[in-house]
Length: 476
Image 1: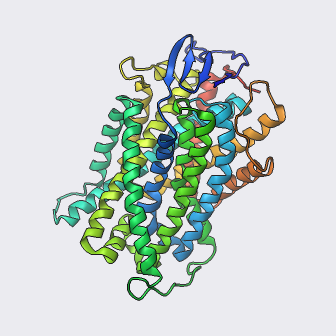
Image 2 (image 1 turned 90 degrees about the vertical axis):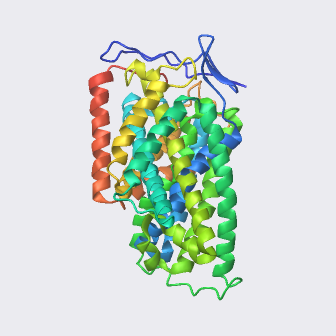
């Protein structure tokens, strides 16, 4: 299969005198080819795509959020996760169509810039880069909490909290790993996610049987809306960070094999799988302790749930799984953040230096460093909930605009727009996806919204200053 590139000429230069790079000569199932050279090889198959999506999402939703979500919404946090999953699915379907029409690195940024214009693309692209950095920092802080719990479990008393230090260490290590090659990163991701799914399936199966009385006496469900109705939506806004993984599959679309088949399967499949895991996890966790006590355990609540079910072996197993999950989430997010930088640089919205490919490893090493460095600064703040919500805000803006971009492209029907997958239920599905994405923002904390708006404003000002004369291929 060969996909035709977007064929509208780009014009203009940025302040450094750089013009957008030419579109690739061809986009095949094996590589993105430019001037007879491979730009980025397609090394990630369907399993790898699912691993990126599931591995990114399953970390926070299961190992960091249950205690925080239960404290906010009680047992109804199960509904919060279900709402998040539904919104993610409404966006994953349109994104799948866009990705098969434009299987390039950059994901939502690339789709929006080609469908709605350079200004929208710049705001989303820079916001995506920063949003993924907030998400990566959130996952790394969560990893630090689990590593700290391991020390506590081993009765190792430290004179200081190791949370931030461990997050910084792993952030630097994962950036270096990604520079060493996408294929290496994908292999590690596949193994980690496989182990996680096996451990979680066994643990949650036991938890469900315990909750319904097969083991022990069962539990008496507490009132479903014990915290009221409004916290269900505010919690859905908080935990939506758990659903960012499917879009990260689109961000590395330029490296997915057989994108026409594998992109939709990876995005939609990962959303459906993790939504089931999330809902079951909250049910099992609240059945074990009740929402109030579960909330007291904070970011490592699932360790105490496992201890309650299986004693010390259960706690150790979940500690190990939590370390793997937060590791895989951070790993995939750093990779995706770098690809956003890479795409922005090729379009002259960032300095061309950022899109240089390492000749030895075939990876955009400058882009990876541009993502990994700021992530370490964010990790140092240690603000888990704020990092999560800012990441959610920036992604929800992108999701809503991706749905609108699909509507615009279907209406314009340019010659180059020829997706191999078309979203069912058009135009209702993308329209509802856009409204749901923007609507969930209303239920976020004012501080998160304010930071997100500032990020968007700075992104727009940067575009006007640095690349205001640039018009991208496919631009309207």
